[in-house]
Structure formats: C-alpha cells, structure tokens
Length: 92
Image 1 (cartoon, rainbow, N blue to C red):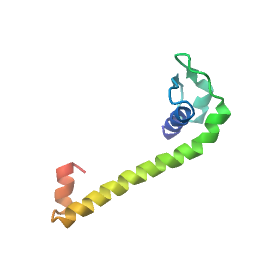
Image 2 (tube, one colour):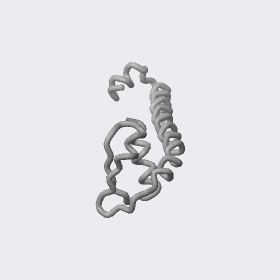
Image 3 (cartoon, rainbow, N blue to C red):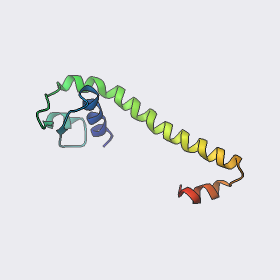
C-alpha cells in the first residue's frame, strides 16, 4: 500500500487539486489511473520521477512520529511518571 500512497502523494505534489483513482496495490497501478473531474492527465514519467522523493518524505514523517513519541515519553518520565504509567495513560 505504501506504493499507492506514494503515487497519490506524487500526483498531488504535481497538481494539488488533482482527482484520480487507480486499481492495484503496486507500481503497476500507474497504468490504471483514471483522471476525474476534468483533471489534466500527468505523464507517468513525471509521477515516477517524483516517487523516490515522496517515499523519502514518508519515511521521514514516520520517523518524526516515532521521535516525537519517544521525546514525549522521556519528558513525562522526567516528571516522575513510569514508562508503564505513560503507556497506560496514552494506550501505547
């Protein structure tokens, strides 16, 4: 599913108002894009060229969430809460 998400994000980077749907769950889904609501088609090559950047951004966003959670846990522990208390409180 990561590839589909990356494809959609790449499309939206190229055209923030684009409306499209596609079938499949891997890179071959690019061949099934249906451009909706009058969206001007974006060449497959442009989308493909942007996918590595989008995937890197997705990895960085995921890592930032992990880092933020760990930072919050550390700060709460510094206030005297145990790791177990924090996890129970926030259902982690």
